[in-house]
Image 1: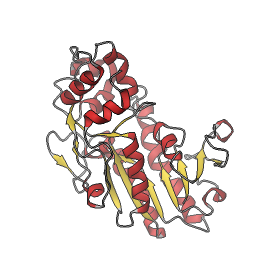
Image 2: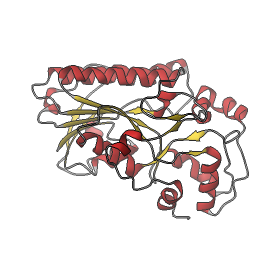
Image 3: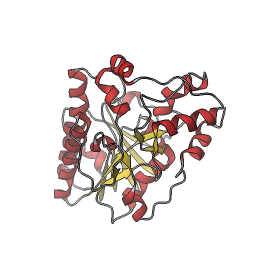
Amino acid sequence: MRALVTGATGFIGRRLLARLEQPVVLTRWPDRFDKPRPEIDVYGWEPMSGPPPEAALRGVDVVFHLAGEPVAEGRWTARKKARIRDSRRVGTASLVKGLAAAGERPRVLVSASAVGYYGDRGDEILDESSPPGEDFLAEVCRLWELASGEARRLGVRVVNPRIGIVLGREGGALKKMLPPFKLGLGGRLAGGRQWMPWIHVDDLVGLLLHAATAADIDGPMNAVAPHPVTNREFTQTLAATLHRPALFPAPGIMLKLALGQFAEVLLASQRAVPQVALRTGYEFRFADLGPALAEIVGGG
């Protein structure tokens, strides 16, 4: 399978590349891309400026579109929010224009989305048929999915993995969480009742590959583990795995003062379940949080 990947330099993209036999990379900085394998083809692309080069799409069976402005880095100023929105909406539209102009089109476009699609929903169980929320990230995800959906007009199957909180050694949420927890300074966020739709990075990559090969998946697919936990449960499990206490909660008002509007993401509750993945036969390697954290941090 010859697969094109955008966002290949990120935490998820690097792990995905390692699982692909014939990867092709689109990046804004092709000269600076450090190839993990010499046979990887690399092409330059500025998503905000127009379609990717046609040569990059030649012979491609599947496109994994993961690129987008990082959500969790920096305060959400008006300029930052515009970059978050436009990098997904405009960048995805540019990619689809490239698919339309290509002589050969892929069978499937796996274009990332996020559980932020659902907004803050309390204890409501959210499957792929649940309606979108009404906050900023929900609107971004809705526009993101609409932009990728235009590829269906070209006869391309489109899957939108709504990605949860990704856990792994080299990046994702744990990279920022582990230092205070290892020092015994971790704790729940606000009341800790909000649901956290987590997923181990190995299962996320597995789901991306599953989406590419399972012909009966079309549309949204919650890319989360089958057993979401509350923030309180997550905190307790991580502390126990590290053999540390978790005695220092972060009050919601302090998070909002420190992080601005981004604090809403940390305090939002999304009890998302992977109904599509389970229905189509995906077998999770890490369905429960305890074994997932044990594999990642090893209790060290």
